[in-house]
Length: 545
Ligand code: ADP
Image (cartoon, rainbow, N blue to C red):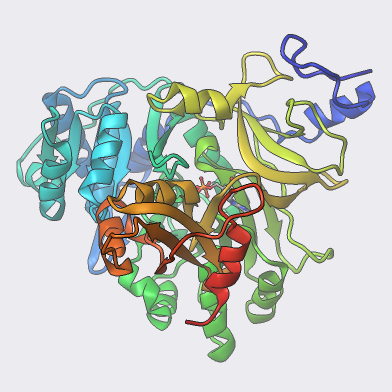
């Protein structure tokens, strides 16, 4: 009658659930089982190249490449990597801006059997160095704008850097290198902010990558063959950027790369969306809000757009209401998951405003097992809050070269032997019909404009600065207006204006993690038990001036 997750480790039975209830929670609420194919993204892309080599694969500004052109470039990059010595599961940093060349570079890494590690050319050298070190990265693909950064970040490390424009001007082999890639081979690493100040590199495998592509294709209803156009809009350091180019390239559609400058200019973004005949787009909730505000003020049809996937943070009901009022007929998907689970693990697909007055994160996707657990990893009854955990092929291998943090978040699935489970740190509860209501975070991980940030990451950088005595970071505002506010105190004699602290943070943190406001205080307020009183700092952050 009782379900005890792991008799060796658990102390007390946590839940009084009947067998039937347990079976329902374990099997009934899991995603549909679909036979996993042995094919990787590379196989599927090369099939599309053979099917229709002259179809458009990538568009960006005035550039338009066919499948044949993209494939030949990716092949040349793959051959160059192989000649440089890249072997199975060697990590290759791709330090490039988003562009067709960047997509060719990523595919080139996959074709060579390497592990794709995207790095933003805008990141501070110190952060890039930390990522290269942690992932024991010995190869990089660069472009003129990133060569200096890679040189600085590499320091004395033995790193072979190849210039992508250089490789593409040499007349290297254009045929596919045909390196065998088993489905359980590592495919990519995305670094996410870590609470101790060291980024965590989530490592995922090809099987999880492809499984995710299939579910994204199903739920966005992408038809095979040319015609579907997907926006590539996310930062290359955010794992959602991957399906944005990979999904259309396995269905035979095309990917349209939107410049960051275009995204900031909303009318220009909407013009390009329509002119580019985009059918599928993905945005974070804060950008959906920006789009909606524009559309409400200047209504316009959105051309071929059929579906918008929204992801990364909680989607407010009010936004969904506004969406269907402004854009009836265009589906909305609330996509929920984590980098550690090869991106989305649950979807709520909506073609109208949901009846209840909140937006759920939906149902388990294909081959995904979803659990809601207590702190002993025992199942909680349907409807009770608990931590959301996922298991199955979607779960990545862990954090690269970081056993301790891997052990904390990636644990054996107590209900399915030999299956990896990822503890999300998110709270949620099952709704009766098998959807999950998202209830917030267990820790201090926050999302600002879709970027995943650990508050502790910023605080530890502040505390590392000479002269800083105490430091705390809080979030001010809600929705699109949300921003980070830092408070610090300095040793009494220290001349340390907030501006100097800002300059320092900009040299060690990506731009999106540098707090909007930084205030120096005499001493930080403390709670009765001597901890920094964040609640009072939140109130202070909200005060004008
Ligand atoms: P992904 O890259 O899959 O979008 P990240 O790794 O950046 O996700 O962040 C994962 C975390 O973001 C989740 O654990 C959760 O806290 C939050 N999150 C992602 N999608 C949603 C969503 N649709 N609703 C609420 N929170 C979300």
